[in-house]
Length: 397
Image 1 (cartoon, rainbow, N blue to C red):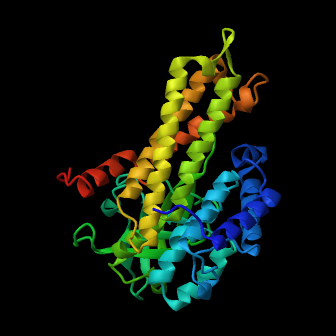
Image 2: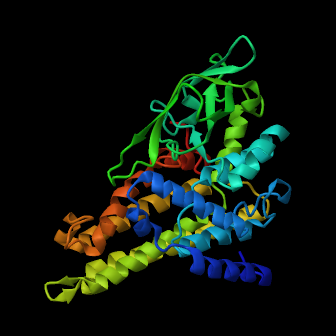
Image 3: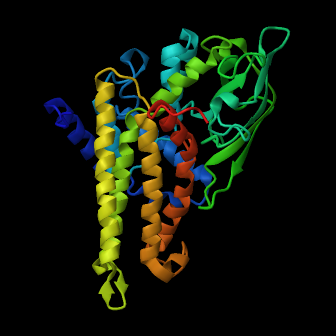
């Protein structure tokens, strides 16, 4: 692996870094709490994506023919790394940009591309993902949402999805439904584009322990979907879904290691500042040992992520290493935040709004929010199964 950037890549990074220094609002984990309503926060995020789009930083790796920048995977990875370095807000249409858009480029009709791709870039068509279900979870092939043809060749979809990120403000949904109940699990699935304003679509936000409601239940009660909203072919949805999930494991994952390192640096600063019976928490040898292990873990994740990116640059498709990185990052991140609350001691009980809360409950919020990180993008249990079967060659459970 050669981690050195080319001259052009360094120039791109420096331009982006300067632009973010001048335009990013600051640490989004803190800034987002200033908005009195979810609607205000969503409006801000849409404007943020439009500003990035106008500057040429949205859809960097998309083909230029579809409004993208035609950039390399390395430049796309640099973008995500610099966004994480600036602690900038995540783009509200991340599912459209990293999953729905690439799936349409690979499998969509020209009409579907004309309708959606430019509007995904400009945040006019924000997408959510209708994959996970209450009785299927991360076992995507076990989904039960059904779609049947009506008498005119169109489809009627009925079922329930859960853990549907951004559904409460999305315009469209990429949705997987079973269209042939007699076919094997991975067959008989169809990939649909569903207008979220369709009659029969209802969304119920799920309030998290952190107080946010960014995930949702999605209910589909005899929702009519035109035949031309099928991506790929009927009963061929598994192929499109696999393409979609491969893009989810793409360059954006490189930002995780930087988020872990940033959180670790902040935890070290906190340990140096906190007083424990007349001495710094950082002087406790046990605390120092635990922080040192996190430094080792963060570096291991960084190198592993760069190795996976190198494979993709050489033409390989994302493989099970994405499951390893996601599993390791989410559980390490949770352990780091648990240590941080230990360092706060009795102040860990004081959250946002308390006069004596340290950093206005910032660490408590991040701890509570992190509980979802071992569920999103495949639970820890599912990722362990993937690694056991595809890497270690163990029998299926």
